[in-house]
Length: 343
Ligand SMILES: C[S@@+](CC[C@H](N)C(=O)[O-])C[C@H]1O[C@@H](n2cnc3c(N)ncnc32)[C@H](O)[C@@H]1O
Image 1 (spheres, helix red, strand yellow):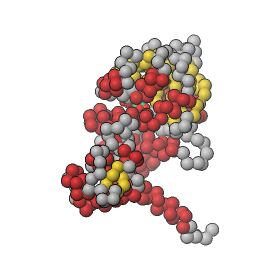
Image 2 (cartoon, protein in one colour):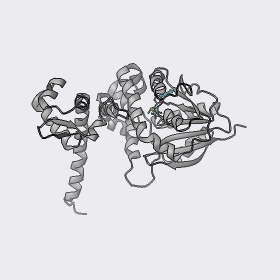
Image 3 (cartoon, helix red, strand yellow):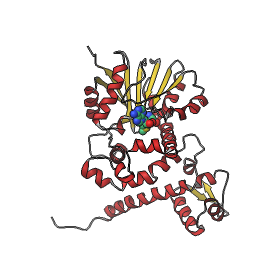
Image 4 (cartoon, helix red, strand yellow):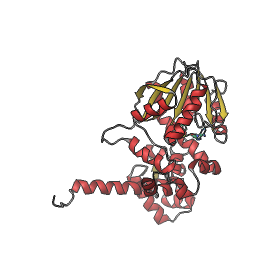
């Protein structure tokens, strides 16, 4: 076949992909400088924002112009910068904020890790330790600021999807729900708020769970929701009739997932149920956010997104039977499993 010049559409598509990477860097810079926070109380001039952020006025003006073009800000009749609805999502002081997601996913450590994606592809290993010097969980444990960003980022993302999970799956029959790797409790809080009869336990690492206490109290759930610190590689709290794991298994390779699932299986009665909330990778060629999130997991932690068959096999190895997969309006699905009798 003769080599042909690529079509205009093809080169345009590649150019867009390259510039999207620059846009995400610019969004990171604007968020790290706190531009959305500085515009929270009203419009400001470039000079005022340069003063507030210790920035070069001309360079900051160019950043603002670019971010205005992508919809974070607009310019008023006096030439001042105004926060748009999209920009509001990057104020750190609003419920459901994604400011911490941007600070974490586009920040130095994660960005440097993505810079090592070739290492992951060629070795099959996570790139985080090569880029940052330790594995991702040691990084969060050793850096309270980034650990807080992780908690807030997960809560922000949870605010986007919790309702879609609650409307897709009936939590009504359950009385005690244990959310394993539940972070700061945003997901369990939403489930308990929708099901006033249920009680719950948020289980996560000992340096993570304390941050959940004020959120649980603010939601008026302190009486119905307990916070327990520990590791799911050792022991998971007993007594739940439902065990949930949202965005947990995708952090881990198969062998680690089997250990986590077995920890759950060990404390579950035969009547209890397990719910995994994760994306399910479609088998076809189509674009799916799951296929991109999968690469993020590959470089960051050595985890992965999984197909339905991969979930079925993983669950079987740990003593569960996959009973159904319930899609939601968000990219995440609910994967339900029941224990296989340990007889
Ligand atoms: C991607 S976050 C998901 C958090 C939460 N389920 C959510 O959807 O927002 C993964 C969680 O697993 C927790 N985790 C990691 N290692 C753990 C361990 N050994 N035992 C318990 N939790 C762990 C992390 O602290 C983090 O909160």
